[in-house]
Image 1 (cartoon, rainbow, N blue to C red):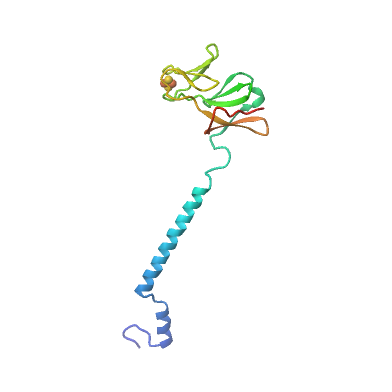
Image 2 (image 1 turned 90 degrees about the vertical axis):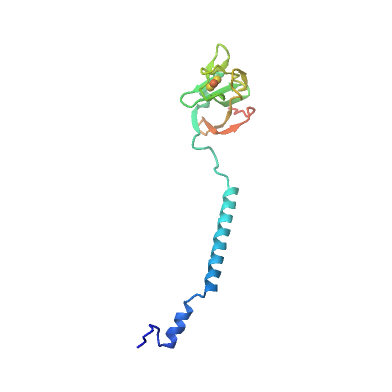
Amino acid sequence: MSVTGQSQCPQCEAARKDHTLSRRQFFSVLGWGSFTALAAGLVGAGARYLVPNRVGPSRNAFVAGKAKDFRAKVTYVNGRRAFIVKNERGLRALSAVCTHLGCTVKWVPENDRLECPCHGSLFDPMTGQVLGGPAPRPLEWYRLNLKQDGGLLVDPDEIVSGDVFLTV
Ligand code: FES
């Protein structure tokens, strides 16, 4: 019987030593483990950077209606703070969010312009440009796509140039 708690069996002692790490082995394992975790994190971050956040419309995209139903020069999309603007080149989607302090601009056909009720900014509905008032920038144009069923899909999270028309 052992009073020290150690085994008297030579095979048991060898097996115990096989499962024991020296200080050097412990720090070597710790160092390589940390390096591997760091390398995996960097590779993952690099891969995430290279993959686009999304493909296709954002979750804020909405269907404004059927393309064939937009016959007027300017149509406000109820509840969406956007206009569908039409001319001879096609359709576009224009933000109705005033670039001054964010009020919703109104289409005033008798004045042939968009007018902000809050501080009086005026915008050209065909260009989005500021015609007057304190607004610092033109209105933004949103990505507009045609769905297979003829619906107009407006994506307010994707700003496009005012030269992008949807022909239908
Ligand atoms: S919010 Fe439109 S002019 Fe101020």
